[in-house]
Image 1 (cartoon, rainbow, N blue to C red):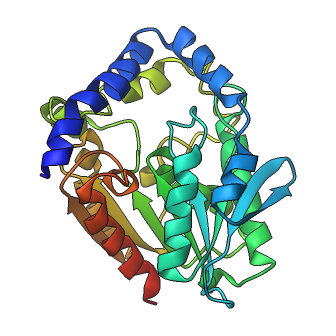
Image 2: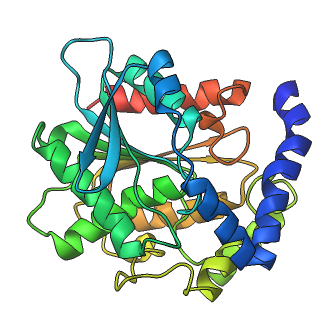
Length: 303
């Protein structure tokens, strides 16, 4: 681990993990506080001064398009931010999306999907599917990839499950890049492994999924009950995948199940366990992010 990561660990633990632990213990004030954050407008004028992007909407869902330096983009990447399906995307997502476009030659669409508690799981997945169908008007499925961090990484899988269930005639994208995905309510074995990793994880508590499982009045399915368990659905003919975890994060407990699932359903899978925390590649100030981004960009540049 880098010295900077070791210095950052106690800060991350206080600022992120402690707040999540408080949220798990008292989810109603936690979610309502986050709901206020959702209502804060993105500083788009400020972001436009720093990054070049177009503002678009599909139905009521905003998305922001970043072009690569090349005149002819090498495909479209749909970018799904993280935040537990509660916290909205932030300015740092624009920085990461810009870096992806620059290093892969892909046109990046940042999809600002709706969030709990006002949206249902069905509506969240539907928004991702709608944005994807909009991208299909511009490029074929063989040139479109889903990328996501944390819950956004889970949405990459969930959107494919949604398309299979509700829009079976829509072709799936050619690839998924999922960074630190939340894959299901943990099995007993996975939960045990999470608890073993809990002291090392500085962002995600081992019992996070209890909040979603025990408070379905806040985290409503809207009839799409597969939403929280994409790994338990059919992955036959799913896109090829790259899945990344940090070695210090509790969600790495899902890695073995992902490998077994991909083997069972004959899905092409590459994996990478990096030195660092949850979604370490997105934490740009950490040296650990550089290695993760290289893995992601190399995967995206090849066919």
